[in-house]
Length: 260
Image (cartoon, rainbow, N blue to C red; front, side):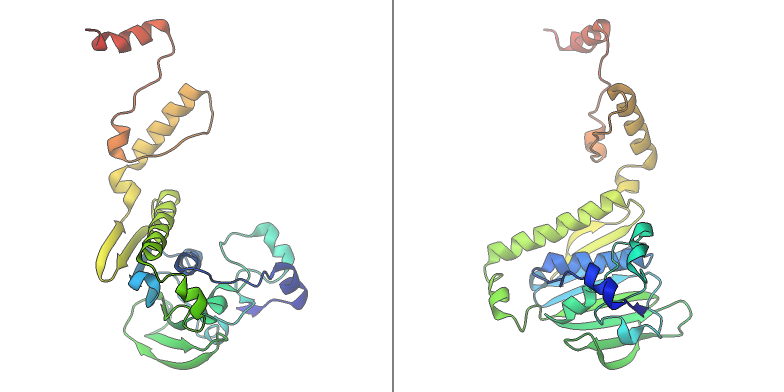
């Protein structure tokens, strides 16, 4: 993990600001995906205002990188601005963890394949490590975000109503659903207040097999002449799909069972 040069920081920096729970979850999930995780657990307490925890089974963070893992503009994704032309990751500016540290208490527990045990690091507002201790967790990284917006009472006040909090939880659910659709091999689970809110354990392969998806998309491509305006639903919806008739005879055959 290296610090970006000043000229690159000037081009990339957007002064990232965390404004909601879903912002935090999105940044942490994308970090997990960049680390090669195949399983991600998201746990929220009090709609994420008291605690947000994202745990993955990715590569983990090397010990040599941990002192700067939450410091702004330190990243392992790129070294200079020109690297953006070959970008293959979600994040690259080195601002996510640093921005979260500025508005909450953050602890990171991580273990690589080479490490014997995992280590938990506690950060300060600037992203620097203030303490560390051994942990029992396995390979991967767990980021715990506590007391979100503790130093920004006005922003926390925006989530004072139950309606607003429920809307934010729905946004988190929709976010996980989106990742489940584009990454069918990914296991995702969301838990709120120790009660399972939504579970996406290999959602698409179990609810809709790869063969079903391929067959449906191929059929739609053949019927629609290669148009790529497609929408994938679950198996219950798939069972009600039917081929689009292309001739008058096919139309009559399709409508005949409906005649009284």
